[in-house]
Amino acid sequence: MKKKFILSLTIIMFFFKSTTLASYEKTFFDLNIEGISGETINFSDFKNNVVLIVNTASYCGFTNQYEELQVLWDKYNKKGLVILAVPSNSFNQEKNKNSDVKEFCEVNFNITFPLSTITEVKGNNAHELFKWAKTNHGNSAVPKWNFHKILINKEGKIEDTFSSFTKPLSKKMINKIESIL
Image (tube, rainbow, N blue to C red):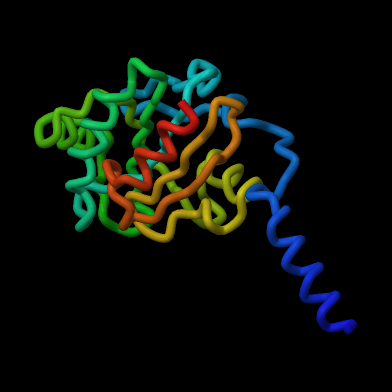
């Protein structure tokens, strides 16, 4: 009897489990990052939008996802989707200079969405954005590889995360984005 009660209670608790771990002392909109050309990208400028953050790299097997990210941007930007690419050498697959990354993205993929400077995305030297994501959403927000995706809702909280294997134009990604736009 006691085992059934504990099992039932565990199942009930699972259904009421929150997808977030913290109380969000700060939201995404309280943060900023340096843009690829040296300007400050204030996330407060993205209020009332959905934001997809993707840590990227030029020499990765997933680099072709830039193409789908641009298609996603073209299709949903006017509806309130912002894509922010965060080039990173955390996995030793990025160019050494911001200007080279910018040129690579523009020439090879015609990227028109915002890019940050080359930024650390994991560990003690991770940018505040990624530390904030881990604090508020747990380890699923920590990039395990390049082209990890973090989806921010209009309230500035993490809605969901997606692995590198989830393509930007996958049904899973499109459905989630459309449900919160």
